[in-house]
Each structure stands twice: as C-alpha cells, then as structure tokens.
Image 1 (cartoon, rainbow, N blue to C red):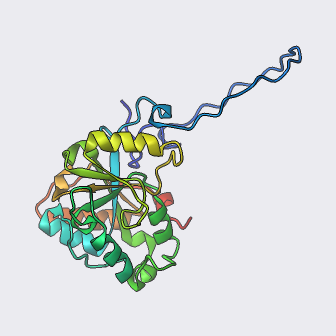
Image 2 (cartoon, rainbow, N blue to C red):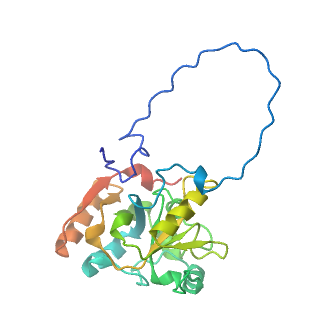
Image 3 (cartoon, rainbow, N blue to C red):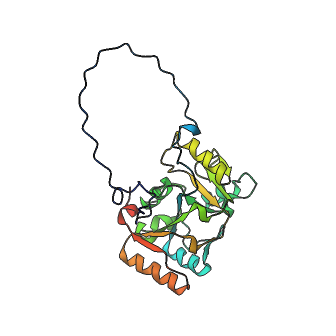
Length: 249
C-alpha cells in the first residue's frame, strides 16, 4: 500500500494521492415526473463509511522544537508534563485540569493527539494564536518552530479516550477505549467529517519509538530534529519536510 510522505492518511494528500478528474457528464433527456416524497433521516453512526475506525489511523501531536528536545531526552511523551514552551493559556490549563475522562482521571493527565493534521487548534496556533486559548509564548512563536508527530493509534494501546471536541470544553463527550471511541468517531462523522476539533487522549507515556513520521517546515528544522534524536540515543523516525501545513490559514 502506498504511504504518504507528508504524514497524511491514505487518500488525503493531493500530492501523493492525486485525484482523478471527474468523467464528463452527458446530458440525458428524461420525462418530467412528479417529485417523490422524501423522508429526512437523522445521521447515525451507521451513516459513516464502514472503514471509518480508530484502529489503523494515525493521530497527531503538535509541539515546539524546544519542548521536543526535552521529550527526546525523556524518550517519551508524558501526560501532565510541563512543556518548555507552554502555548496554552492559564485558563486552558485550568479547564483541562478540571475536565475528567469517564473513569474520573483528569484530561490533563493524558497525552493529547489531534485526529486531523489540520486540526482547528493547530490552525489557530499557526495563524497567530489569537484568543483566550493561547499564551503569550504561543503568540510569539513562529509556525516553523513547531513539529507534528504522527503516531499510529495501534501503538497507543486500549487505554485511550476519544473526545468529540476540545477535551477541556464543557459540552465535549468522551468515549473510553478504541472500540467505544470508534463508535463515537462514527457518530461525529455526521456533523464533522474531517474531525478537526476531535482529540484522542492517551494514558502514556508514549515512547518516541512509536512515532511514525515527524512533519517539519523546512530542511533546517529537519536537521535539528535529527540531531535531537541522535543526541538522545534514539532511532530517527521518518522526517517529512512539508511547508504548506505550517503556513497560516
């Protein structure tokens, strides 16, 4: 199976998986008929594609280069760790600390991943980090100073929690485990087929050896990431240089 060098799931990258031009539609004359009565159905999980599931997907963790250096020294992503460059505001930190997963654990104790590489929060961050969600450090950082770590869901185990929106928001609903998370993902598909607000929370620690691809903005950052992994004595994962995903939306 072909694999995208930019970290996207199969079929989502127009570069690695170019879309075929649509076939020309021929005009067909038909007799005019009276319109049929239609029944409006409420979308359910069954309306989602049969292949839509958490298992086999990749999820994405965005972090600053300086924070990645500390992560490399630890050898893993750790929940509740204090990042070297904290892009979240104090309010955001408090909301996530008080929000709880179905088993009562704090959301802040998990390692958070986005379901989409172009997640809404990442779009906000790379476009100036305006709003109460972000810190002064986030607003001062350049998009090219961040990297995106792509991790297969299968490498996270079953101790995961799916959030159908911002995990710190009051209205967000949670589902524990891969199977329940898949059902919640399929229900979310009806209103948000791109899953740009959804998160997957992993109990962690998540070893850096589980990282499939690191996406970076340019060659300089690629070389820095390689040096970080080498200094920490870790195998270097695949590194994809893909500037478009770091450009302001």
